[in-house]
Image (cartoon, rainbow, N blue to C red; front, side, top):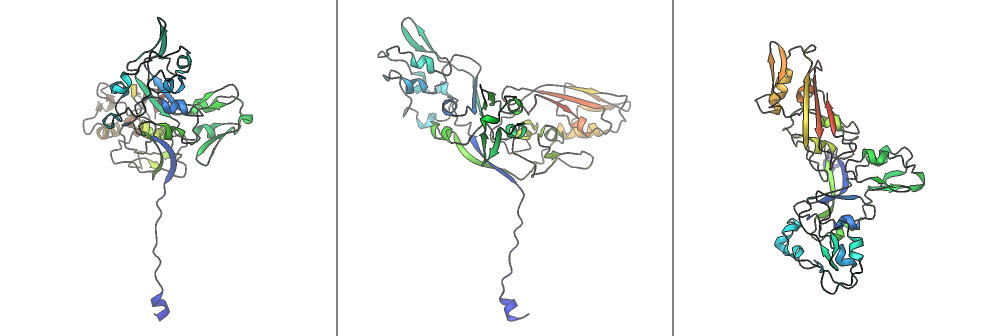
Length: 365
């Protein structure tokens, strides 16, 4: 070795880990008080607030902001540190709110209230309070609306959805595929997609919203029960699963758009990328076994042992597969594993908060 070779430093080799990243609006539900103030301020209507009880105050403070004579107390400065993150019905500063005697009945608060919680009775404007049973969700920037638009009226550029109104033909395809159900059609074009303006983050009174970079390397936890649901619901076919050759599903990161549908649908919570979509609730399921096709291989029983941790719902009787429907959790692992495809599982989800491309009905295999 020459002196020059000895003095030449050896370059370190860094192996890059393949991953997909996207900046999103993150909502910390331990802080969010479901007031809907972010919904009111969003310029594109990309935040959806639903209430089980209509006409009840959500304490968004819009009435106080529009009142010309300050007859409605504002909550600014009234939230105690220990109250941050509590449900709004537990916050005394809200429960004590009322329309004061200096009200001039201009009706501006009545007209502007997004919840319809202000009413007129005996010459007075009053606020109807109570637990509205609110839930909230915002556009997840999955870009499915842009991908499905046949005229390129919606585009995903610079990590935001861009609208070209002149191209829109009001076909409604963006509304159909939207998992969060924030997309809707207006008179000339759709609205409901996030443009990452950050107004919701700035206006949140309890700091529940932030702009967060979400990344995923395609990792699926060992708790995976091999049901194959993630591969079935993935809209970009980024997840594949062959139970005969794979220990668990495999993710092609180059196809993943971080729509989070797989994470929301995973019955074992083995995919941890969820930033916005809530965990979906399986309302009901049904399972059918065509025993004319069953070969008695026992693979469905083995798959169910994984799902139910050793005490399966499926079993063999006289060499054919049966299922104890009282024990079955509807994961679909048996149907995915069955080489004869004699088992069919139909999963029906609650579609109130997650729908669109994330269909409320998933059929396995």
